[in-house]
Length: 112
Length: 123
Image (cartoon, rainbow over all chains, first blue to last red; front, side, top):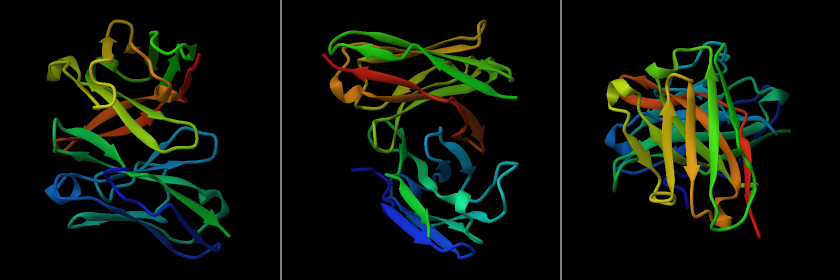
């Protein structure tokens, strides 16, 4: 059971827009901690996709965008492409107990 | 170009120890925090531990699941981060990723990842 909750899977056709949600609580996202997103292509290491809720590292297409509100965050992907098929993970910091970095359970994006 | 290369993984029996290394290049290693994240077969990502740079005290943090068994250290002169794993359990079986921790407006995120090294704990 992950501290951050993501849907196990989402899907969309090429060219469509999909969103992936990440729901936390008052000890992590709701406490004001940033949300970051990582993309893991099949058989590869995760890669930073969005940091600080809505910022893209250089090289990440502007088809990817992030937002945060209250105790939740979202990753939006517009103009879906076949190469976007991957697992996506949200991550934040949790101030409960000793304080730790926490990940969502991951969402598998399937491009139909 | 930033590169993180993990090594030291392999097959180990329950209760034994293993030390992973993460050799960094392409940046001033001593200026950055480093972290370890693992991924059990077919599962999601789990944060394992974190070590701050010497400028921030070089202090460490650990996930509850490994606290007391795992230790992270760093050798800035060699640009290497280590993960010492003791009293290994079968549930520690995973790919272990080394990541760089980037401080941005007071919070860390993991901006570069290594390719991972597989640790299998089995008798």
